[in-house]
Image (tube, rainbow, N blue to C red; front, side, top):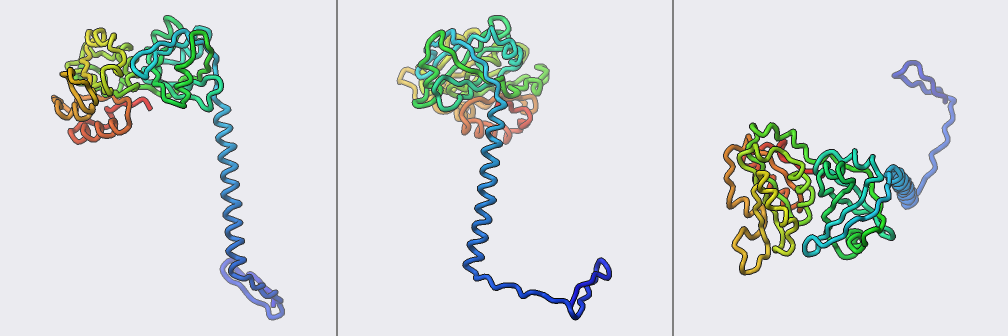
Length: 299
């Protein structure tokens, strides 16, 4: 018996064509074959993932730069200044508050992602990047905070799009800007406030800044200047001492107590810090009618 295709859709069997019988394969053997095949594909995908990750890692350009300052900024927080005056590409690549980079130190297992605290104009004028770094035990950040002036670190290229303030401009159309930050998340907010975003031309700009206590509240020496630019500072302490008379608890609870949004359609929002805080604030504001397109994040 033989086979002939008489048309694309027909099959003719000839009587003298010979077919070998299909050998019998026991079911346990089939299972082992299928398992081996799946493992082969999984291992191959794993190898491809490792290679792809290596390729991505290799694209990072690292620039060596010395530290010019390492000073306490608050309890468990450090003010770190890196001299980038010999790295003009880094200076010019930082264009918007909220951008960040990777920083690595000698002998640390992996780099740390850090938002740049100083405004872009400071990089241009003085050739420095400033950071607010939380020292966490066993982390690269802890190793960084233990370094001294003159020690050399490595910086990646500047990353991210930062806070796109154009989405809440012009100030005349977005009179209310609500800013929420927790812990070291105040770092890119400092850059935003000191870069300027027309706060003085807006009717209601509030910064809800959450920390455990006053000892962990960074940049208190800058609050007066920030308020003179048109930003009302609302510190919120989750574990204040008995003498504290300001807002307590979490920033989302403090905001819920105050609310006072005159017009959700002319309200912009900036979020930086704890993920749960950002999610809860977003839910509250969207439910009140604030457009999700007007809620800015830097990551």
